[in-house]
Image 1 (cartoon, one colour):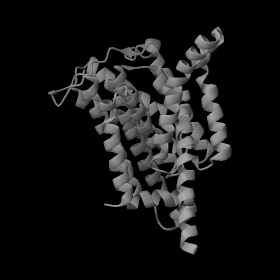
Image 2 (cartoon, helix red, strand yellow):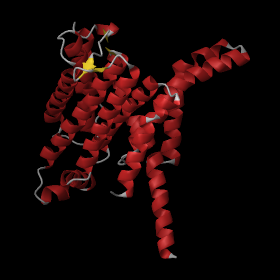
Image 3 (cartoon, rainbow, N blue to C red):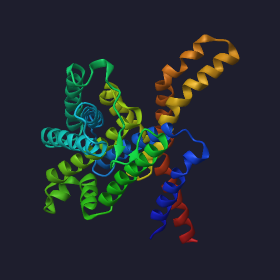
Image 4 (cartoon, rainbow, N blue to C red):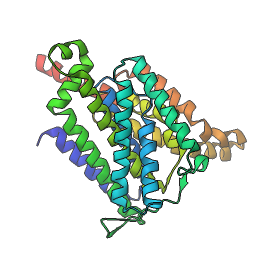
Length: 329
């Protein structure tokens, strides 16, 4: 077992004990859901070079599918999750078939247009609850005996879901399939000249990314017992781009770090504003939480200017430079 894998195991063990240390489990579960979503997106842009601006369609589609299957159809929780993942994968296949023949900005805009079409479908459809969303989704039990009404039980289930998704991405990236994706990212014409069916590999990458994003959406539905239009908006697609860029494109831990930073900001800026309002007596600070996008936008600008590889990417580059310097001594 190499040092990298040992590091991942140690990190997972650290996350597993957080509830025992008094950390609010719902917050960590929210971070894990968005981190898995960002990792799925990173598989597509960081390792394949495809910028999808419609990834919220997979998150939201799976969230609605899982919620409807569990609440209305009465499916067991684990079957509802699998159904949500299947719906997300199917959406990825359809979107890929329509968009994969284009590249660059054209691919990006087609994914955005298709995602917006799906958003307006969710807005009008009866089964989604429209602007109110799908509320009161029962968590149920897992495998018939694990009561998911308990936040602690659900925490470890969500952790297991996250680790499963992360493992799938890790294996995909470090397999011959992943090497082909990297070759397509670096030099697509050369990959074609070597005999690879580039469109086929791109489609597989998009479907896999969509399925894992759907897994994150299904888990999020269980955490918040609801699925809303927020999960399917273009702003959500922009948010996952921000998470990935801040953490570091093409790195395994980058999207996780980016998700942790952005979600922490969303939760803490409001608290900071209320504290300032109490100290200063100025009511304007009460609305600071609504302006969290200003703060995240500022962080994005700083990261792009100062950390072009993202936080994790710059750290890895720094470590590599130190190793080279020692080797040359």
